[in-house]
Length: 186
Image (cartoon, rainbow, N blue to C red; front, top):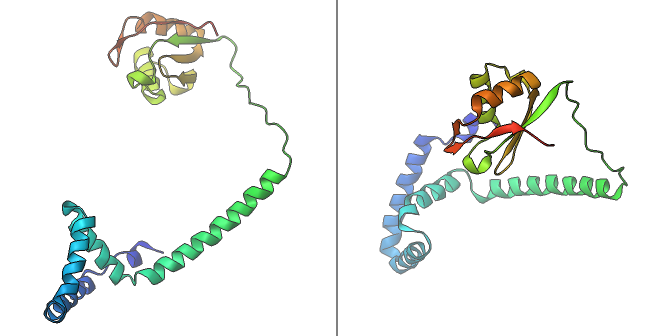
């Protein structure tokens, strides 16, 4: 479905609204108690600030043909879901060889640093990478790996860049925490 067919025609909606208003006026004169019961249900179940959105949603459903299209989408969804579940059952039934964890091959002379700042201080890989690049004057490719944990992080780079990082970042404040950085024991 392209976007244009998915958008509502505002002119048609306006005429629908006028039709509904006319029907309400006619219906209120002939069956006011039925409309009052429905209004009570809406007041009871739809929060006050959501009622206009509720009305807009109902109007959109009426304009789109409502349940007929929804049933068609649901049946398509069920078909896709059943096909996927059959594929998963087949995959589970077939014996699979245990998967080995890929070991990362690091260049010679690579060292790992321990940093005492992690996710709990809102430090993420992207932020740390940018910090290292600006402070050390290195590129993204010079950083071999970043592992950010809750309270600490590990940075793997060349020994030369590690020495620069220790020299420039030790004692610097990162996200409200004084940074301590040194070579990792791992």
